[in-house]
Length: 149
Image (cartoon, rainbow, N blue to C red; front, side, top):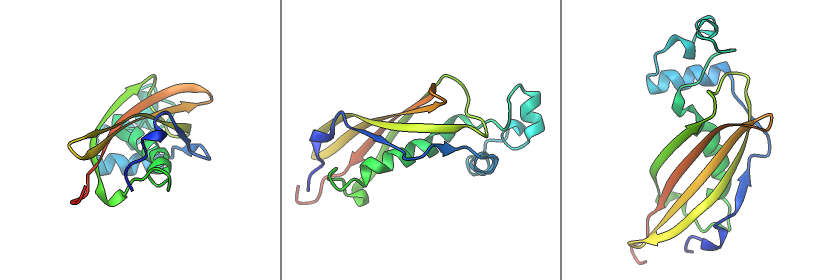
């Protein structure tokens, strides 16, 4: 089944807010080599002016991809996950993400097109807390065409 282009403009929402924990921030920081103490030491984060641990700038990909998965694994999307390749990511922030944030995540399917036998999908995931914008994550997903496409 080919990627369903009729889903352009669709929205996919996480059913529950993503709760940002200290543990998740610290684990992500270690995994990505983010070494600023404000990512792992609450006292250092408060001294830097944050309410709690502050997430590294790319942390927003964690809740964004959880929301994006609702689209990718939607049986109507036509996406074969074994053929998905990450094409790119862009982050736009209104404020940093900190431990304790409860992020509502909505993924918008902004673009679907074919290029060289592959599907190019642009998603935009809006992260909000208490109705206020926190970050936008724009992703490019490539779904490789099959050998017989």
